[in-house]
Image (cartoon, rainbow over the protein chains, first blue to last red):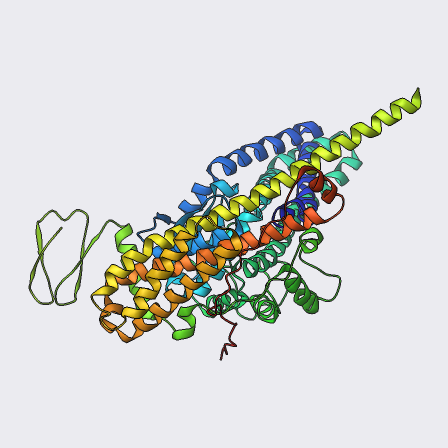
Length: 401
Length: 187
C-alpha cells in the first residue's frame, strides 16, 4: 500500500496546479499593466519563482531549522527519542533514519522537513518531550514520519514556494501601481484608450485577490495531508490512542511557539497560532480542528486505513473520503495493540522527563554536568578552565573531568 | 501479410506485459527479503543485549536464579535457530520475549536495581529493541501479505507460476505472552 499513497495525490496535484495557474495569471497581468506585453511579466514571474525554488530546494531545510533554532542530537543525547524515531522508521519502511532536531521551547509542537525521504529531518520542542510518555511520543513521531514517507514535505515546499512568489509579486505590483500606474494612466488617457483603464482596474482587483486565493489553496492542501498523516501514524503504531492523547495534551497547552510564523505554520503537527474556540473547518486554518482529529482517532475500530476512512466518513458524511482509493484498495485489516508498559504501570514521572530534557539542553550547549555527592547537579560552562569546582550546596570540591 | 504483423504485435505486447509483471514481482520479493533482514538485525541486537543485562542484574537479583536462567536458555535456543524458517523461528523468539518480560516484571521488587543508571539505559535499549522487533515484524508481514496477494491474483499469478515465485511465510510470534489489548479507561 505504501507507494500507492504517493502515486495517488491527484487531488493535491490539482490544487498545486491551481496555484501555478494563479502565478501565470499574476505574471500575465503584471506584464499587461506595466509593459503592455504579457511576455515580460511572465518572464519576471518565472525568474522569481525559479530563484525561490532553487533556494527552497537546496537550502530550505537548513533555513527552516535555523529559523526554528533547532539543534541536532545523536543517540546518546536522548536515547528514548532517538529509539522512537528508529522504531517509526522501521514501522514505516523508510530507508534511512531522519536527522533528529530539538527546539528549546516550552510550547509543545513538532514538524518534519526534507525534500526526499533520504534527506529528511524531524524536529521536536523540549516542551513536547517533557509532556509525552512513550506511546504518545511514538504517535507524534509516527505522524511526522508519515509526512516524510508520503512526501507531504516536498508537496508543502512546492506549494509554499508558489504561495511565496505570488505574495511577493502581488506586493510589489500593488506598490508600483500607485506610482508607475498613475503615470501610465495619465499617459493612456491622453492617448484616449478607455478600454485600457478597465483592464487596469481588473488587473488591480485580481492582483489583490490572487495572494488570498493562493493562501486558501495552500491551507486546503495542508489540511488534507494532516488527516492522511494521522491515519498513517495509527497504522504504523497500531495504537491511535497514543496520537490522540498526545494531541489532547498539545491542545491543552496555552504557550505559543516563539519561533513559528505564518509561513511555517502548516509544517507543525498542530497550528502554532490556534485560538481557543475557533470555528470548525475554517477556510483559513492550516490544520483540521484538533478535537475532530482526536475524535476520529479514538473511534477507530482497527488501525488500518479502511478503519480511519470509515470514521472520517461518519464525521464528514458519506462519499467525502480523505484516503486515496488506491491506498484503500490495498488496505488490509490491522488490529490495535495494547498500551506500552510505561502507560499501563503508572503515569511516568513528569519530573524525571523534565530533568532528562533539561540535562539534554545543557549538554547541547556544551555544558558539563557533574553530580556532587550531596545530589546537587553542577553545570560547568564550556569556557570554565579550572581543574575543580566547589559545590555551592555542601562545599565539597569536585574535579572537572 | 497484415495478419502476420498483427500477430507479431500482439506477441511483442504480451512479452512487454510479462516483463513488467515479472519485474514488479521481483521488486515485491526484494521488499519481503529486505523486511526480513530488518527483523534479523533487531533479533541479533537482542541476543547481544541479553548478556549485558544478565551481567548488570546478577549482583542484585540473588533469588531469581530460575528466571534468569530461563532467559539465558531461551536466548541460546533462539540464537541456535537463527537459520530456521520464519515459522519455527517465531516460536523460539516468542519464548525469549516472554522469558524477558518475566525477568523485567520481577525487577519491580528490586528498588536498588531500578535506580542503577546502567540498568535504566539497558532497559530503554531492550524496550526499544522489543518495539523494533514487533514493528519490523509488522512491516514484514504487511510486505508478505502484499507479495502473496500478487502471486495468487490474476494476471500476475500466471507469471509467478511460470517463473517459480513462492509464497512468503508470515512471521508470527505465538507465545502466551502475546497480550490481548486491555481496555484502558481515559478519564
